[in-house]
Image (cartoon, rainbow, N blue to C red; front, side, top):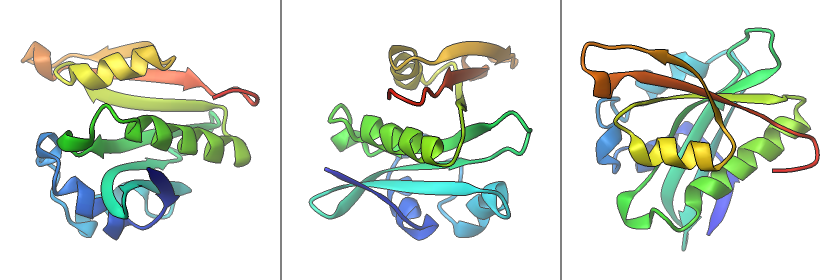
Length: 150
């Protein structure tokens, strides 16, 4: 498996195949406004040259030296093989090289696999944004990025 910094077009190839993320259309115009004119990075994980996962992160420009991991996903058939971990490691390395010290992320209460992954990899809960349907609550997490470890 290989992870590369790449383009939104490559990320969208994967996004279109991930059922849980279909509420956000796999169109460049739906994604670019979030990170356009901000420092950002896009990683795609490849297995045998086939894109299988992606991650998009950007600087929310809040002055806190943090980077926001906005969208990430791995095709169902390729999960539990380390693709997300390799992309997150690539992001952490990129953040260190670019002077960032904190990563933030938001997920939903019903995304249990992602919540479990984030807790297991050192993220702390910081806030819950309640919704009428409790399973739709937004869960905010963050992780300090140390200079010497990933």
